[in-house]
Length: 82
Image 1 (cartoon, rainbow, N blue to C red):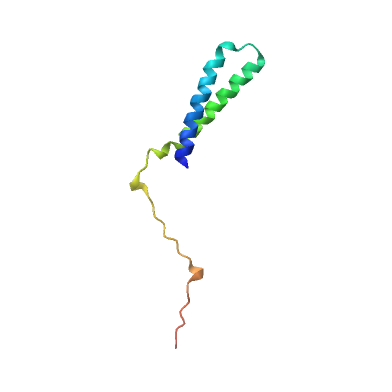
Image 2: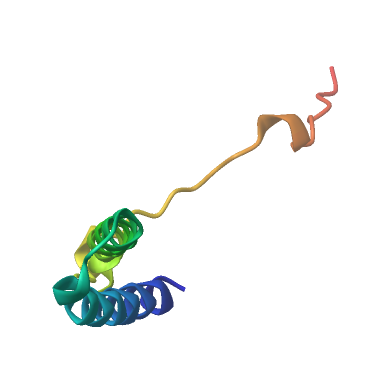
């Protein structure tokens, strides 16, 4: 799932970058400025997604921690005979 999210973030970043460079010479009104600022915001969100999911490439097998969990409430009590 993290790999899918990383790939999606990279693809959306480059698509929005294409539209950013395509639209930047034609900014004439306030609406165009809002559109450009939304593209910049989308690119910032994509960069954040890449930073969060970048650990897919840094799989360190030595850093695994195995936790053994015990539950004292479900154990059988031993009855000792006197």
